[in-house]
Image (cartoon, rainbow, N blue to C red; front, side):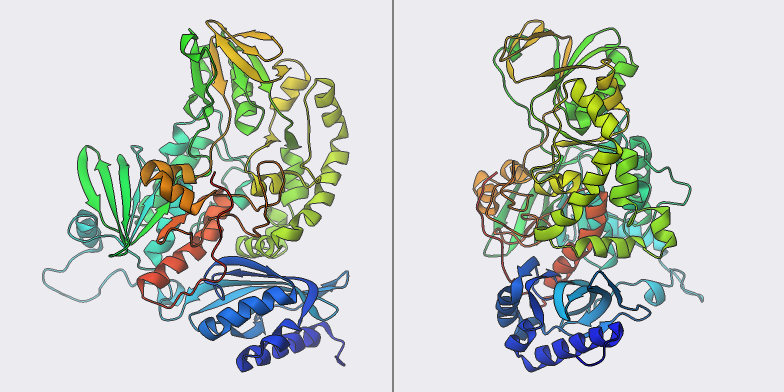
Length: 599
């Protein structure tokens, strides 16, 4: 290309791509991609969350989807200027498809596409009523027997689920269900969110009292309403609960409290679900078309069984059942596990003058909170990032634009920097006998989270207690219980009044087994993980999170969850998929995920 300016070089690639797509010329389109390249598509081209790799992957996707979805009109986003650094040109883009409009991020190497993110933002003809399309609210003028906004809402709440059926039912009313409920509300999709607790936010209020968000506030906004500027950096659990309750009300989500799903069954003939609900003692049958399990990655507790548990005279709790330290002052407590919950619970028990022992069963990745904020998140989610023009939306897209296949390459140098910065801290932990790891390839916390959702602790103080010997540390595996003790396989005997099993949570398809059937759970397979062939994330390579926010092998069954960042960002793409189906749009799915693992 003769013109060497960054903008014109970028525009030339986009012009060539547009021409190839308009002509249906798959070969010309794939020739624009580098040999080592990645196109990550969120719904727009694939009606899926799918990453294709290399020119041949691009060609396969386009050969199957181009006629159906017709992507084109790729442009440099208005007001943005492509930037070149280290031989890579990065530019924000917009585009259209037959069904919708989107934006994304493109990176070029040697004037070939290295990474391309295409993310649908709205469906044509079904745009959200926001901005210039916002509702009037008040109807000016005089009118007899008019219905107020409040009366309309009360009528809707009374009828939905009884006189009229929701199109979508979301099981689970934590941050995931609430975020998706808000998205669907704005898209006009009749939806009911079901939750067993008394109030929205009780999922947080009911946990141990020292719990707070370990991610900083800039990472944790919900859709539409950001936390105010004076909100604390790390939000205490009860404040999170109050925010979720407020949000549910002001976003007018149809949220049924004290409502527990007893069973769900799919009828292939009608294409609908029959969902039996106990709503505060009343039996209600819902018949939605779409069923979303938003029961949370940390939803179904892993409660191991050991010989002698039934004869133990103290109390045994899973970490999800632990309310806090107040009842255990002066008592002996053993916490089995060494990840986030285990550390938080140990620290709180120590503060309450309990005698605390942590049992570390396997190595744990630890990163100090301030180091994670400054080195790991600061460029995208911080006041400094905002000052540099990196909004929450841009940060989400930048993060989403890094293909999972190569994301670890970006993470490794960050965690190396943290390791060097906090060398004295880690030396102290190792001296105390704590077994550390940095992930199997040194890529640290984010990759561990994406691959397996466990195996780490963001240190907010508990590690120093271990270094100082205030929280006792024992390494090994539990063998059995006696009346007053936990006994490890090496014979170590730990007397205890309370044993907290901080042993994590199972795959979300365990909820499908409980609510629907084991057959359906096995049909959709394991939820979460990338297929990285690392510990607890068996191959083959998937390239996206298994079964999350996208079509599954069970028609009309979806999974939604993750941390607040993921609940915010990916709820949009799930909501658009559901809206498109409600409106009868053509949604041919490319690359429907195959099942390789059952749990």
